[in-house]
Image: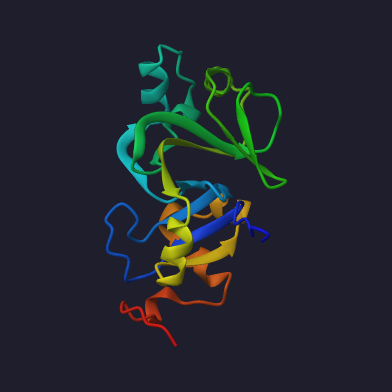
Length: 186
């Protein structure tokens, strides 16, 4: 039996999502296979915390204006783990390639590059990730917890944070504000 991977797709929480970790979130699936799934939330900013705070914690000199960039809650798993989601490049030591155009890097070399201005032009700093055991995500999709759409770097990097949830669904022709919070099956 062939496995249909949803890597490089966006999971859009349905209005009825009751899990506070994922309510009104958009999650980029970075890895999805028979063993489970890994994703990062792209629309939940950590208030009063910036890239310069992360760099300071790592004892790396913070950049000027760019240092004020937001940091996102990538998910509830290992919230101390820092990652950078960016346009793909093989320049970094530890990068997971996501489709053709995205990368998720966990090595310190990208943090130094962000500090000195040589890092990727489009990126998100994330703390933590979301994970699903084998079959768990498929079950949640059957239960109508999520909409699934192809990843769009413009939504990930260029759309205002507060609009990402509705814009991700809109690319499927769905207006989340008109959906019922009750899930059902036909």
